[in-house]
Length: 294
Ligand code: SF4
Image (tube, rainbow, N blue to C red; front, top):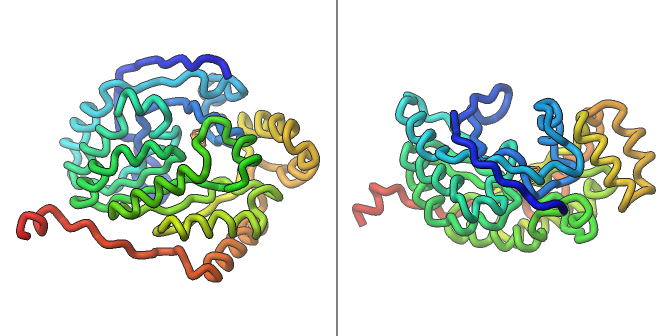
């Protein structure tokens, strides 16, 4: 891979209003992601913004310096406490976070403002932030979703060239759950014939269950312009026999509803057979007030 260029840009805003999603606000301390997943839907946004969505995606990461202070100002102006999703457009625990610690700072600010937080990541580096996650969870709802669509090492290497291996993500899950943080698995995205088979889904759910996952959800691949070209090009390198099937399936960007429903049913059935990860309870972290009374 080419050398990654990091561009520091002053954060003009921190929170972005979101429509038609289960959360009202999103927050992304970085733009661009060195994990470079072949299926990454952000490639579509990059293309629309006039930036490269092909093999050059992930070689240029914009770092929103000052986002923590900006978030503090925005939170001070808010009269509501709607939840904030972190990591909707780039991984908040990609390597840059090790140096800049912007995600960490934002969690601290959101916690202090008693704002519910939902984090989605493929980065085991999140365990570094157990302390601030626990502090935030004492004041508001905190939920982590670790994206782990497959435990097949060949498929992982082929489709997620920059992420940590799945077993490291499960290890991170165990650390978070043991620390009292709600942490579940996101089988996202599931790839037709490759990771949406019952065997593949079962293997992920089994490891998630053993790692203490508090919830599990899934979605299926979509191939919007900008994602489609790169994904199919990479698929042809490692899974050439699948290309024709994908072209047949993806006459549009999204798979037919019936296809997605069928995969969802398979996941639900396996989840039930395994005893049900859904809504598994963990010991709550006591609110600050209660702690001070002990
Ligand atoms: S980790 Fe997420 S944001 Fe980063 S490349 Fe992969 S799918 Fe995209």
